[in-house]
Image 1: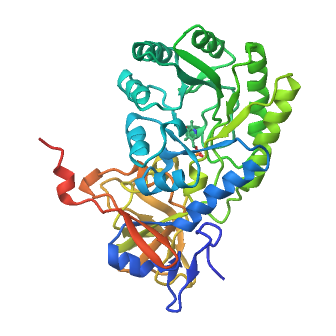
Image 2: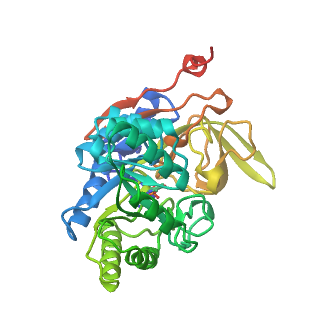
Image 3: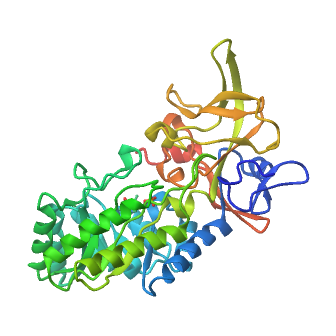
Length: 433
Ligand SMILES: *Cc1c(COP(=O)(O)O)cnc(C)c1O
């Protein structure tokens, strides 16, 4: 039986040698060839999730935009893959916009987010012909109006509203409640002011509403609650311009064997049925729907490989095992208290007979990858595989302590290709003038 099968990519297997493999590639051999830490994505799993999303929503309507939230992982290979699979992309800064354009995304399939877009980013989006921007505050509406009219163009905009739903997830990633830095609150009247301001501006084209109630959600009922509030708001705004309803992202994934996320099909049913029912209830025609999955497309497809170095046992306290990465390639444990479950790529079948603390190599006591890791006794040279690290790992990576960021490899059908080279020491000082 494949240990931790539910958190590894579906292609995970054990080789004749007893090593863990993904996409037909031996992970121990990949660690030897490319060094560690190494981020490995199963390309088939990435494409499979993109297709699962498109097919699940196509069951409900022919024109749903599945918008890949690129902040989850914005490597060029991933952006090209998302484009090939017919997804749209959301970007949250000028830098992510640049990356999406460089990967060949047609600008009309790009959605621009951000709670503090500046005039330069807005100008870059207008010059590129970005299809749709999601506005977050009144300051930004003024900038769009000024920059669009200066260019003699009309920009399509969605208004990001906060419906006041507080989903059950870590409070740092709950964004739909009233007290949030994101969006216009419906309750306080700010959302209505935004709609009126955009309608009054001749260079701005209001096309719909957006809400994102949070991330890593297991309970789908939050989408129904949000849709009910947003539908009431859409009806109160009147007019027939609110044709697009972007329901955001947030579908959770399994990080450990105890996590039981909803299937994409059930998520699609929940979102589409919520919008259909609530728009009918308030007497409005069904809008076009968009969704913005990030984590659920890339999270399970990626694993990170580390090499164990120093270990120590403090009698009566605990055992520590240190690896050659840490908070610089995987910040989520430190940032959110996120929990991962490791296994050894070189002997995945060995009984996990002990609990140890898997730590990184950074000068921070909080640089802990897994607080309570169930593993067999480990020694220097063992290759640790941390599953479900495909989302918000590489994209939040840093150079803290002068640690170079990992290489990224895509595997498929027994072939591995480097899509991002490992950083070099020279890269670390290249920008210093
Ligand atoms: C982060 C984010 C997403 C993606 O969230 P996931 O939980 O990764 O699916 C989608 N939309 C917005 C506005 C976001 O901020």
